[in-house]
Amino acid sequence: MVLDVITSPAFGTAAQVLSPIIETIIEVVNTSKNVFIEKESFLELANYLERIVPLLKELTRKKISDSDGLNNVIEILNREVKVAKQLTEECSKRNKLYLLMNCRSIAKRLEETTREISRALGLIPLSSLDISAGIMGEISQVRDLMQIVEFKAALAEEEILVKIESGIQEMNVDRSYANNVLLSIAQAVGISTEKSALKKEFEEFKREIENARLRKNQAEAMQMDQIISFLEQADATSTPNEKEIKYITERNSLGCQPFKPLLSFFCPITREVMLDPVEISSGHTFERSAIEKWFADGNNLCPLTMIPLDTSIMRPNKTLRNSIEEWMDRNTMIKIASMKPKLLSEGEEEVLCCLEQLQDLCEQRDIHQEWVLMENYIPSLIELHSAKGRDTRNRALVILSILARDSDDAKERITKVDNAIESIVRSLGRRISEGKLAVALLLELSKSESVQERIGKVQGCILLLVTMSSSDESQAARDARKLLENLSFCNQNVIQMAKANYFKHLLQHLSSGSFLRSDAQSSKIYMIFLYVMGTLRN
Image (cartoon, rainbow, N blue to C red; front, top):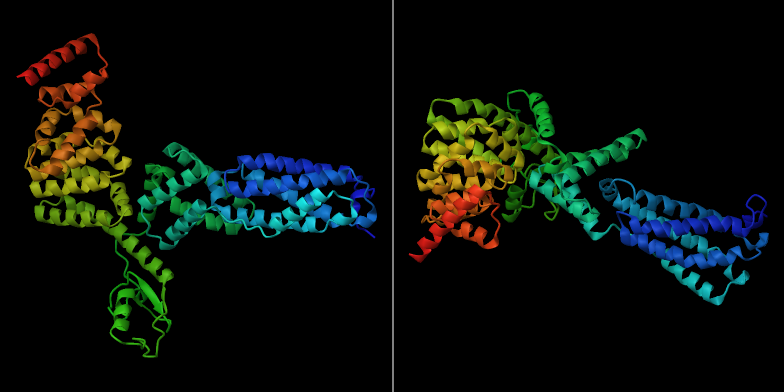
C-alpha cells in the first residue's frame, strides 16, 4: 500500500519532507508583503499559510507510519506552496503594467491554490495523529475558510480593466481618455506619473508581450497587442516622433481619394450612414434613434421583413459600428491631408471656408487634432495669422488654441515657427475680439515654462497685457491677469509690469524677498520701489 511517503526510503523522514514546505511557506509570507498587485489577496493567503505552520511543525516531530495515508497530502502541499511562491515572486518582480492587465487571472490562481491547500488539510487524519486539541481546532477553522475563499481583482484594478475593454471596443476614444486611464494605472500600481517613468514602464510592458510571443503564448500576445494600441494614444507612452511616423505610414497607405461607404453602413429607414447601429429581434440592423421612433409610433413589425418583433430586444451592433468608425477615420485622415493646400489660396473666402472645416474637425475629437499637428498645419496657420484679414486671423487663433490645449507637442511646434509669438502678441493691440482670442492662446502657451520666457521678451507684450487686464471684456481681463501672473516668475517681467503701473507682483516679490539681485538689478529694483511708494503716497 503506497500511502504515507513521509517515512518511505524515497522521501526520508517527516522532518526531511515537511521542513522544505515550511521554509517555502515562510518565504511566501515574507514576499507577499512586497507584491505590486492584489496585495490584500496575497496577505490573506499568507495569513492562512502562517496558521498551518504549527501543524506542519508538529507533524515533523511525530513518528508517522505508512498507514497514516499522507502521500496525497504531501504532494498537494508541496505543489501548491511552490505555486504560491512562484506567484508572489512574479508579482513582486514583473512589470507592474503587465501584472495589472493580468490581475483577474492572478486572483483566480490564488483562489485555486488556496482551495487546493484546504483540500490537502482535509485529507490529514488529525484524530489518529495525536495532535493537540488547540491545533486541531485551528486547522479545522482555517481549512473551512480556505475552502470557501473568493479572490477577485481589487475594485480600482477592475475599474481600470473595464475602461480599457470599453476603449478597445469603442475604438474611437480620444487621447484624453487614454491619458486618464494611464493615470489611473499609475496610481493603482504605484508608478510615478512623470512622463519618463510612464514611458519606461510602458516599454517594459511591451517587452513582456514580446517574451510572451516567444513563449508561443499567442492568445495572450494578441490580447495585449490590443491594450498596447489603446494605451499608445496616451501622451506619455509614445513620443511625438513615434506617433508621427505611425501616422504618416498609415496615411500614405490610404491614397488621396475618400472611400465610399458600404451598403451595410446605411440605415434602411433613414438611408443615411449609421452612427449608433442596433440589431433588433429580426436580425436586421437600424440606426438606434430611427428604430426607436418606429416603435414609439406603434409599429411592432420589422421595417424590412414585416414580421412581428419583440420590441424589447435591441442590441448594439458593435462590429458594424467599429467598421463604420474605421471608415470615417480613414476618410477624415484623407480629408485633413487634402485640405492643407487650400489654405494657400488667394481667395480669403475659400481660406475661411477651409479653416471653418478644420476647426469643426479639431473640435470633434482629440485624435483629429493630432492628425492636424502631424500634417504640419501650424506653420501655415501662423502664416495666415500674420498675413490675412481679421476674420482669417481670428479663425487661425481659435484653431491654434484648440491644438495647444493640453498638448506640449503643439505648444513646442508653435514656438518653433519664426516670429509666431510676436505675431500673436501683435493681436493683443487690435480689436478686443481678436485680443481676447490672442490672450487666451498666450495663456495656454504660458503653461509651458520654456514658452513663458519668450512671451515676456516680446517688445510691448507686458504693456499690452497690463492694458487688457483692466478691459471691460471680463474674460479677456481675467486671462490677461492670469498670464501676467504666469510671467511674474521673471524679475525683468515684474519690473516691466511696474513700469506700466501694474505693481501687484512687484510688491509680492519685495515682501517675500524673492528677488535674486545683482548689484545693478538691486539698484534698479530699489529705484522702482521708491517710485511705487511715491505713487501710492500720492
